[in-house]
Length: 77
Ligand code: SF4
Ligand code: SF4
Image (cartoon, rainbow, N blue to C red; front, side, top):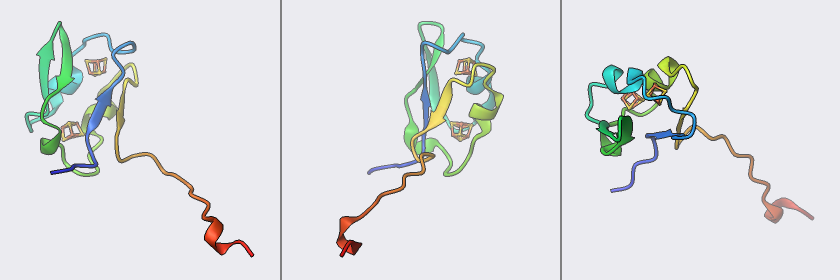
């Protein structure tokens, strides 16, 4: 099953404060090498920014949060 919405952690920015791990009640994260790691992306709630909003490093982005503008040449004359 594909799932579009889930958090992605920039490990180079993450300082291991665990605010994201402590926030989420859906089993999305585990701890590996003293930092959170996403192991259950299907548990993440569509549109939730709960963990990312708490991150002091702004190290979390969401896979479905990118807005793209796609120019289709089919409309060109
Ligand atoms: S966005 Fe919400 S549901 Fe998803 S991992 Fe973060 S706190 Fe959990
Ligand atoms: S809240 Fe941010 S800095 Fe803290 S553990 Fe999570 S990703 Fe790392």
